Length: 629
Image (tube, rainbow, N blue to C red):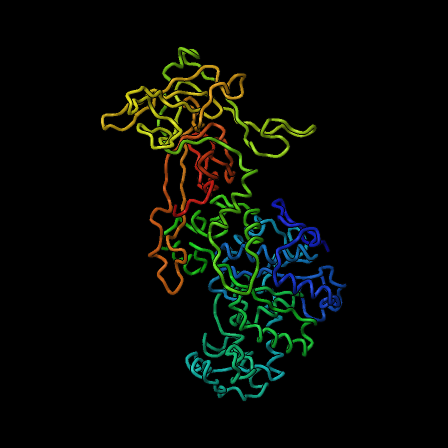
């Protein structure tokens, strides 16, 4: 059996744990201790999930550890799931193990193949393979329903489970609370034979939904309320997306989950802290089923870590669904959403999310991670990868009044700039090592008229302003010439003034071109300027829709303390503008990242972008953190 390898989106870390120093976390310490002590060295693997007899026929497990990512297919994955994916797959990768992708599909009313397909796509996109082989099928809890039923019958026969016919309200009251022990059900003393007969009648559909449940028989006086005879099966007539109408009884999650882990020979079952109180039942169930010879030993062990709390974000599926269904956002893949499909459409990369998961580490204590940490990881990843391009987001036309005289009427001068100015191997200078491709270059033209950003011209410049301003008279009555700047990749120009429309708004900026100053030509640096501004030629510029996204919430903790998160929605989280971009950007592929020079990192929208006359770009992240500044 081959061990998992990353797909085309390679994980950041080395495949060998000793090659790279990893951030310290308690899960790594546990795994390293188990490996040193040979805790799971005796395990066998039957080649697929199965019971004790199945694995006993197998070979020594080639995977040193087995972890799992077990989402319920009832919604789209979000940034918290991305952390869990990177954690579980990353640990398996680093310690010579295998990570399983398993769907915990025990709740037929809320699950759908749409979510199954989305989860598979998200895990692949993040760069991981599962279940020990390329293109392996994910595991499904529903494939284990037959074994779960057999295990339930064993628990009944061994006196560890009984059928309870109390109402849900009676069970709630008789369960007690933290200050009062529970009361035994009047049905708790039935014989195993009676319980088995009733359980089979439940299976055969002889009772209505909610008429009875199967409960584990543990201790109604336990200080851990989760051990007060928890329900493990309920009647639920619902068509399951995988098993259809075969079953009208379904296992409870707390019962199914440990069994799934054991059948798959998971060694380290990693989950978030809200499951900590369920661990005693997890261990109790494993012990009972190993006693009965149904499951192999040693059993899996559950370990908990703190869930991700990210500022300006909510991650509860119910609340995310409310945003979608109340049309506060355009859908699950809205670039403002913390879903993986939303982050991907926003321009986030697998490498950036992996770096984020690695950087924030793993702890057992709750804390808040500032959103700027996530944004910083994206900037770090894109700095040497994202092709550059010039875009004018708030355009005003600049006319070089002496162009025809100096350059010739109608002349368009070709210009070139590197697409990756800071790429390694001398790409910034255009040099490439022998045997390698030269760095890509962008081609565009400059003529008499160009577009510039309105912010690059001020009639009355503030102190320290270095961009375009017109001639003026200073306080001593002396003439001050208009300022000179370089049109990046083009010529030096000198501002001579502006023209206005009937409403007094600036319609055009006027300048003269300084001859023999084209970037990259001999003598071009003889005229010194203090600033270079970006621009796009009128002749070959392309109109583009640009979506300027901001954080979805104004409150750093929008749903903490019972707050109504809807009230903190940011009304300015999306602004749509028509910008003008250089011609190279018109040929962008959907999902391709760029740095719009001076503005930030943008991505060609995966859904709406088209090449040609009307490309669509989403703002992924600014060049620096400017939130609240």
